[in-house]
Every structure is written in C-alpha cells, then in structure tokens.
Image (tube, rainbow, N blue to C red; front, side, top):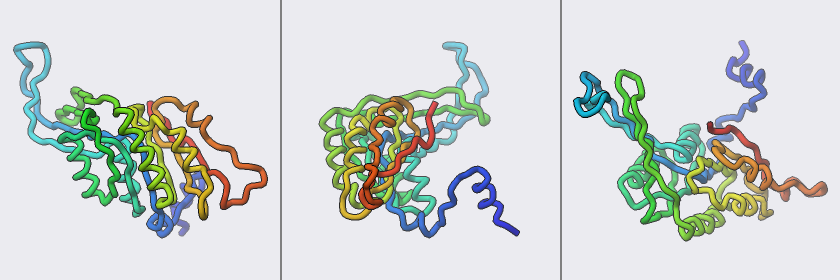
Length: 231
C-alpha cells in the first residue's frame, strides 16, 4: 500500500522532506516574538460594575508565540533550531527564555530595558474566548542594530534562515539581513524563507536578490518565498 502522507503531499505539490534531512538542518528563526498567555475560568455571574461577565480564573497557560513558535515547531520536527529576537528585561521575557529551553531551542536574545515583551493575553471560558489584551511596544534603534550585528555572526552557522514578521519592529533591518544572507561565502548560501509577513510584503519581494545568469550553484543568492501571510 502506498504511503498516504506522501501521496497527499504529492497531490498538493508539497515537497516531502525526509526526517533525516530535517534533523541535520541548522535553522535560524529571526523576527518578532511574543508570549501567548491564556487564562481559563468559569463565568457564573455578570459584574455589578458593568454589563460584563466575571471570570473566575482557575488555570493559566503560557505558550511561545510569533517567531518563537516557529522555532519551537522547527525543533519539534527534529531540526537544530535557534532564535534571534529582541525581548525586554521583564517577567514575560524571562518566561520566553524558560519556554525556549523546554523546547530545545537555542535562544540568541537581545535585551531592551525599555521594551515591554509582547504579550497576547486571552481570557477563555467554556472553550470560548471572551477577551484578548495586548501589551507591546517597539524595540529601540540601538538594540535593533545589535541584533543585526548578531545576525551576521550567526549566519555562517546555519543552513536555513526563517524570517517571521508580525510587524512589531523586530525585523526593521530585514533588507540588510537579506543582503547579508545573499552574500556568497564559503560553501552554499543559506536558504531564506519569509513566514507570516503581516505587513510590507513589497519590501520583501523587492529585497529578493536575483541570481546572476552565469552564477554557479554555490554562489547563487538564497531561494526566497513568501510561505504564508498573516491577516
């Protein structure tokens, strides 16, 4: 009997990558990270202060979000995953570090003392989301420049670069990053993919460097593609 998974992937024109190849891949995820925080509880009454439900929180759960979730998924597939991002000097930032360790993702984090690490807090009751509260601001320029320099250092150590853009400012210097990734070095250039481009698709498409007609495979710019687009 033929492998149904492989057959389905073939029908959808999705390339099948052997697990052995995935486990050998060194993947660097760069972009906007966030902490997805969930509060679960019961609603038994309406507040006397306003016509809103009162949630008695009984359970809390934190999950990696944004680029951190992309890195977690890569590690779960067996890849050697690393994450380059900016977080604040705060409790959510420390929680992201903790969750990255649990997910076996190598964290390459730049710290911004003025940054509020992005949190998306969701309040749920009986499997229904009642409210979402966002906490966020933009990293400062100096920290972003340090992140760009760190990217140049990490680039030769990775085979695949994934850029996860949620329009939170972490990929302000993405054009320079793409240029660095496309610069020929010893051996093949890493492949570059763009994941969850929430804003500014044109700058990604414009930044994709064309291959020279006579360039050899070892000196061609990395392949680039918009994998998906966030709403």
